[in-house]
Length: 525
Image (tube, rainbow, N blue to C red; front, side, top):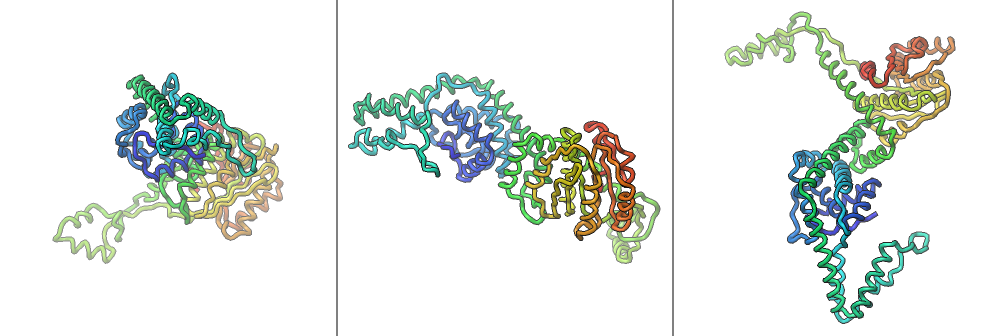
């Protein structure tokens, strides 16, 4: 749907028009906001464009000289917007970022539309009178009925089916209004121009009266609430992208760039599904836990100081050796000791960084997982997916109930983010739970596909399930032969003893809100 962005207060760059229209094409709720806003104020589409332009391109654009007299209400809103504490920070967050600027503009303008008092009565657009007068003056020898024949006799456009579309109520009212004016003028241009000028002046006066009726204190309060809503929307959307391991910036997703258009498509998909938004909220909490634990491990990797040794590790030098760097007379001694690797340094005992392999996540989709357990399990999987993407590891997600019902692969550096969202949405309420098919699928890919060598298997489930003794013995042999580990995440606590039969470690989460920190070490896999 294309909107008519008539000049209102500012000169707007063409790129801002292009990107705002493109954003509207992606997000139906934004289109609805603009369309509904137009029913209150005829120039609302232009107002939204100017807000987008200020956030995306330039915060203080050049004003029209002079601006249309009917734009006084928009001038007031723009002026108060710029004076708000937080305006500059919002511009900094949105500048040059189409998605961020679009989301902030959409939420800000939605709040403005909701809380801005409507004009009583609603006044028409004065520009339409100017346009009609211009057409009449351009053809002075032609009667008005001839000048406006294309408007009076316009036939509805035809869609691909070839059948004419019915006229909208607005089109019908406009034709009736124009016919009445031509009839009142006796189909004479001079008289019609005079009538149009009178109605245009009346419309301008009404617009100015409306602007004067707006209380600046109330406007300021309204815009402050709208600004806060824009910030909240950006925070929410940031969580959507972070769930996928993305951000506002123009980062590289593996070996391919993630374009702003692709991010808009992903954000639009998340915005349209309540479940995905819930997963993003939980994933945000879990991501903080994961980052804190992984950061703590990175600090611990330095190791415990055990004694003093000789070497050339500048990060572990004793203070007495560092003092030589500040004394020019003994610096040559430092340089010689560095060359000979005979500087005094601390000896530490720490864990060596291990090469981490692929991740295979088995997701329980049985009936009892429906609702919050499934949302929580998907959030755990999303965070593991972020880790796999960042570390260039293959991720496989196996959905199962009594059988394997879906398998999604995400190779390193080639994550298909749209498919990941589809995987998060997928749920197969199959009734019972059977671990064996999922474990067979996971072990077979490790055994048969080279890219899964050294993988870790993560089983996320809430149910009890018996496994044949023969299968458990075969699984134990394969774990030794193929050198992989199995980890269990048990929701609710029932069935821990059964999981212990084949899991190297189990994290039990009885409360999906207060016990989230219990699985922090899972994110070190």
